[in-house]
Amino acid sequence: DSFTSVMFAKLRHDSKAWKFGLFKMIKILSESAFNLIFFLLLPKYFAAYPDSFLLNFIPAKPDYTYIFAAIFCSGIVSLLLFIPDFFRMSFKFSGKTLKTILLYSLPLMIAGLPGVANDSIDKLLFRFFAPDTSPWESQVGIFNANTKLAVIMVLFVQMFRYAAEPFFFSSANQPNIKKVYADVMKYFTAFCMLIFVFITMYMDLFAYILGPDYRSGIVVVPIMLLANVLLGINQNLSMWYKLSEKTNKAIIVTLSGFAATILVNVIFMPYFGALAAACGHFVSYAVMIIISYRLSLKYYPIPYEWGRIVVYISSGVVLFLISLLFMDLPLLTKTMLNTLLLLVYVTCIFRIERINHVTVLKTIKAKITKR
Image (tube, rainbow, N blue to C red; front, side, top):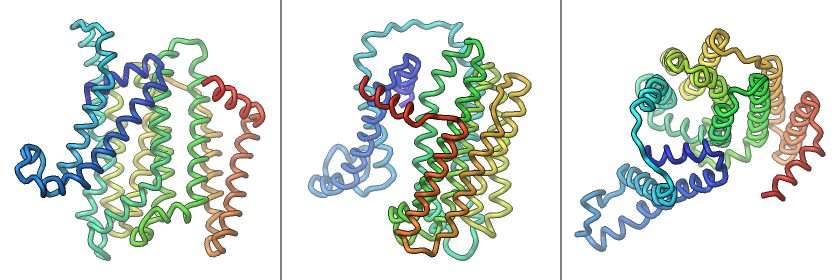
């Protein structure tokens, strides 16, 4: 997986977005397929063939090993996809290049450790700080199930990062590029909040994806959506220390966010459970944004339009709060009113940014036709 990640990075560097997307999709689908095959078919196969050589690698009874095996097999699929690219490449070791890479990337690797822990530490803290109202395992399950409703936001943030980073690096030396970076942040936030408004307006419909036993935790969904908006903003901000080669500052940013997560969960989880875990994510990303931005002013200032960014976030939140007034209405009536609120948000964005919807539609049509 690490080896093919380099190949995926090369596709991004070469601006081969469609090939990158296709290969990533194949990897995801293959991992899903292997999971289905292993969990649904392998137990029956082992029951019929108890002496199978596969039992040297995975047990007859399904457990987490099956998941790792599926990831491993999907990694092999990715490797096979890149075989033609391997034959077109030449490899030469350069000590100077290795030194440059290590000096640049090691701080990011170290910063990544609290970053990864920050995303999962709350699940561990449930065991020690969850309220006594129900078993902590069930509270974790409910929290995890409801955070899945925010996956659309997570996917968009990741898609944006994959697409934007090559652009940021390749255009760093262009004149007035910082104004472009600021515009990217503004439009990114506006679109993220559009996703927020869309999901929250139809949250009752999305809730049907969850089982009845998990819907009690749906209150965390808006908070997790907002937290992921802040995560995306933070990833945009992170370009300052990558472009200025001050990657050691990333450690300060991620450690501060990690500390905020632990602090919020330890203090509030015994009283609010999953709600505290969701707020922990929100506060953590907010703290990272503040610290990262303050540091960027010294090393790589970018003229972000924070006024408009705040307007987009606050207007989305206000529309969500207005939609709560319709909670007790019939589903059809509520859906129609919430759709109206969604259109209000889109209209406001178009008016504020002075976007001509006809021009946008023509551009999209031209892009599709060209493809």
